Amino acid sequence: MIKETKPVSLAEVKEILSKEESERAKALLGFIKKFTKLTPKKAKEMEKELSDLKIFSLKPKDIVKIIDLMPEDTEDLRKILTGSEISLKQDEITKILEVVKKHKTAK
Image (cartoon, rainbow, N blue to C red; front, side, top):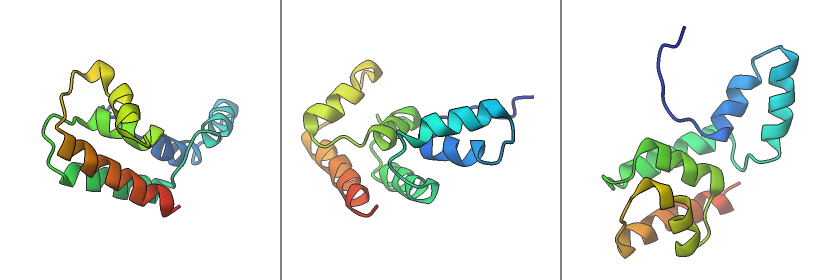
């Protein structure tokens, strides 16, 4: 039974799957490990920091995309958010990229 629907980062998915015993979960876990850049704890910290920026046009699903893909520059960030119909100001982009850079170097 589905209790709640919310976007989660790959790091959180990795944490959830690590508790599963099935072969399918193990196979997915192996695949996800190749693409996960942060620990679940760091991903949650980054999610909180991005949410705390109070950029109202940035939705939870957009924050998860940012965490999973860790954009390096304005162009990367804009590509990630292309389908979301978000219009960010340059100062908002700068703040987002500062958070990403902080967490990228803090691995």
